[in-house]
Length: 349
Image (cartoon, rainbow, N blue to C red; front, side, top):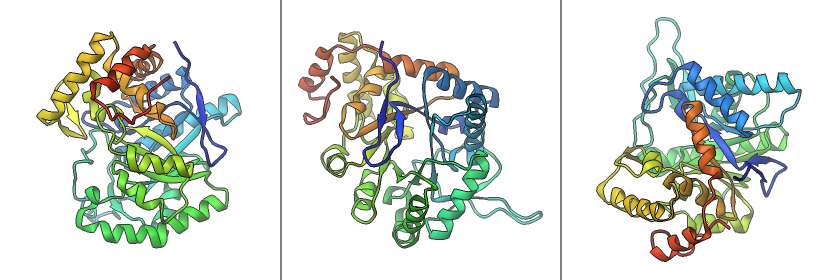
């Protein structure tokens, strides 16, 4: 079975492990996660060779940055080295009221926000302004307990996320937030800047207004959804913008093919039917559906890493096994021939 290798970002000196660890599930996405289980999951990822870790203020309302920071500080103390890459995000600030003062109203919920079963007692406020981005960066440093954050992604900017508020949020980012990120990068405080979103259109638009190094794209380049392929991924390849592939299981339905979540909500019937056809092809070649889903996105030349979330040591070990699973070339050829994926999608060698 193949080892977890590393790939370099095209536009920076960063080198990330091809399999990365996302921390959103550790905040209790869909169901609670104990601190012991979260800590064991992060340690297991490290033991497997994962050296790229992604977090965000949103995840567990600050909890996940605490957990990831504890792991990485410990590894630095043990080894005396910083042989890991860490990303976090800007765009949301966490608020706590003064004693006796009420919390600000919570953000309007959308389909990308499923709530946290193990979150901290804070509430979120969107802020993509210059001051908001600088404050978010400093707050994340404190929660992580680390002065170093390698990558900052602008989190969840897009029309599907913000609806009628999008134009204001986008204007704040273009006129202020990008300026803050540019200053942090130019000053050497961070090594790379990008967007971390579910909406590929936001990254495509940002490419024309700011010099991005990378992006984290969730759910839009998977076995089930290649909508980012013809426009965004072609542009990223041409401009040497590295792509971290996330949400590769489309919220879980590509793990087993059952009637589960798709894009954070219950899967509609047509998606369930499409996944059933994918699973039937996988079964024909004795390939786990999840293994194919995990390996497929990395075949794109823009891809630098595929990030998976796990809420236990067993889950991240299973993901690593799927990542290393040998898959015959005949399966990938049959996938193209079946018409179940875009004919232009690159296939793993």
